[in-house]
Length: 88
Image 1 (cartoon, rainbow, N blue to C red):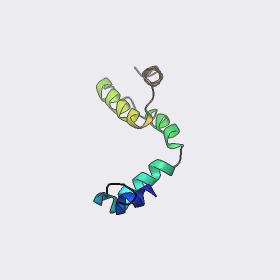
Image 2 (spheres, rainbow, N blue to C red):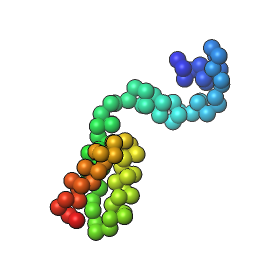
Image 3 (cartoon, rainbow, N blue to C red):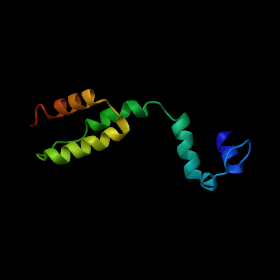
Image 4 (spheres, rainbow, N blue to C red):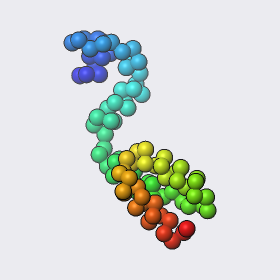
């Protein structure tokens, strides 16, 4: 309903032209009603980042994975430590 009101500008909502686009609607719908397992899947995806003898590259890729996972600093450090324990 909010989306519809923003498209039409009804019920005190400011009309937003870009909301007519399907991709905007789909993104909002997935964000609001999408599967909740995405947040649980993201940390597992971080663990797939390989260490290739370049610590800086590894850390950048690992941090990029944390954009979705949003794990705390303590968990982030533990994940890195666990990934590098055998390899570094």
